[in-house]
Amino acid sequence: MDLPLWATGLIGFLIINAMLVSASVLVYAERKVSGYIQNRPGPNRVGPFGFLQPFADVVKLIMKEDIAPRAASPFIHSLAPVLMVIIAMTVPAVIPFARGFVIADLDVSVLVVLALTSVSVYGVTLAGWSSNSKYSLLGGLRSSAQMISYELSMGLAVVSVVLIAGSLSLVDIVEDQASGWAILGWNVIRNPVGAMLFIITAFAETNRAPFDLPEAEQELVGGYHTEYSGMKFGMFFLAEYVNFFIASFIIVTLFFGGYLIPFEPLFAHVFYDNGLGWLLGVLQFFALLAKTAFFAFLFIWVRWTLPRFKYNQLMTIGWKYLLPIGIVNALVIALGVAVFEALGL
Amino acid sequence: MVAQLLFFLLAIVAIAAALGMLIARNPVNSALWLVLNLFCIAGLYLTLNAQFIGIIQILVYAGAIMVLFLFVIMLLNLAELPRREDIDWKRGAAFILGMGVLAQLVYIVAMSFDVLPHPPAAQEAVATGSAQVLARALFTEYALPFEVIGLLLLVATIGAVMLAKRRFV
Amino acid sequence: MLTDFVPLFLMMALALGLALSLLKLHQLLGPKRPNLIKTAAYESGMDPIGTARERYSVKFYLVAMIFIVFDVEVVFLYPWAVSFRDFLAADAGLGVMMVVSFFILVLGIGLLYDIKKGGLEFE
Image 1 (cartoon, chains in turn yellow, purple, red):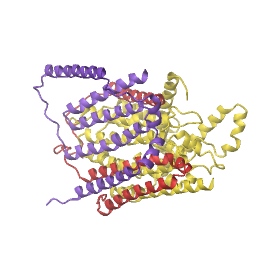
Image 2 (spheres, helix red, strand yellow):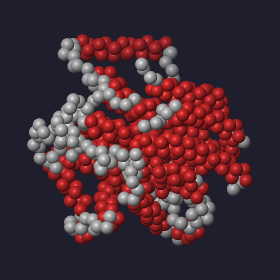
Image 3 (cartoon, chains in turn green, blue, purple):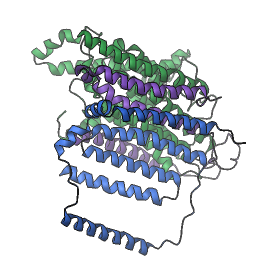
Image 4 (cartoon, chains in turn green, red, yellow):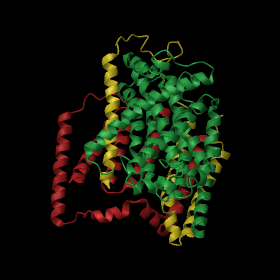
């Protein structure tokens, strides 16, 4: 978008606030869904249907005392949660929300997402180290080893998408999926293995169950954020929920047509002919939101359904199964692209 | 103009971060200064319109290599060095000023003999920074060095496993 | 272009502002009553023994090392993936495919070696 800087800033500010609101909605949704899965009502005291519960939680977290171990390194102890929040809140800048509506339209935006993901390892490692507590350090080391292991397979899944689209820009990747009847152009149809690979690694990168070894509250103490309290803990919590919301956005953008509405090529020209392009944009935004909501629900659903992996199983899956599958998938997709080009499709 | 301003800003922060890395007494702080330095260098690549290289700089150096550094620092439990009390700040300031004057002198002499490299024009930089241009060179003209990189990486993995798996009796 | 990145930096600055204001708010509103027990490191109710910064398993170092190697491999695949269609259009697809396949094969051997030697085994 070619907007003046202040307008971009305003939109960015609104999007960050929208992310905060969606994080609280997701916290509420998670507690409610887990409640119904476990045959109990979930939060139902604060506000109608307990809807104000997450806001009460935020107030509680802010009013709590900030306790840090006296042996901790104070600056790094505060830096780690700040880093996590910055990374979580920066990724929305490159997500295309509707046709022509993206804050930072970069040629390499998919790499920006991966680079930010790789930097978020620091938040975890530094949180674990700076606390100077054995549980924190072990939890931090374990989860950072997990995150870097699954980053490779995530990168390979992205390679297979880039092969099909021939571009590193998320906008181009979405528009590339517009070809083909109805939803047949979506990458999940053209590249199902890559889609599975990316969804699995997204679960691992966001430290969500069944890959939530860093939390593992039932068997370990709490992982890298053992020594965090009050809003500093709240910032890790916020970053986790924003991260899995963003991960849902990225899954949809890369594999499920992004903002494209199913059957859109059949009727999109009606909107453009009548000068109603903005209405199509609004509809696209809601289509994206609906698809994203499904994956956000999937994240919650899986957490309360599947048991956690053991650490050795987790490393085995990452290195011995997902990485080779990712490599072979990239080569197969390349051959597929070559064959389709040769046939002139 | 803005690009030039940004260049100097990034360069100053990069140098300051490098100094911070050298001066820091705690190895983890030192590693973090280096991370800041690498981010500034990525920013410098962006000012040269080399977007792909800039992002890769963050992805590989900040996201992978520095994580290994941090792991090693944590695994070896490198302790904080004791703080030196006998640093002569006057002498340090004099050294920095002296180096500044020397750099100026060298620059002026080099200018007068016209031996300074001329920066490439902006158009040229646009053409060399993108992933497509890189790919065209890497997979055709430089295919052999590319395969040698592959072998080098193979040696690196084997070496790492050999070292870590060795039994010290 | 560099100017394309300005909105991204702007977003980063806004996120930094959010994080810092959350920290500041927390500092202003939260009580401050530290005592010796409260500020001790958590150790399941015991008094902490020694420091946490001890030596840890070399496994983590090994994983990080192998990660770097394969990360570099994946990074080399991005330019290939972006311009694969261009290569096909220029009738250079087969040659480039062979170059990249050999590269992947070499690193595949490396991965196989690591797995067979148990370098990625976490008991």
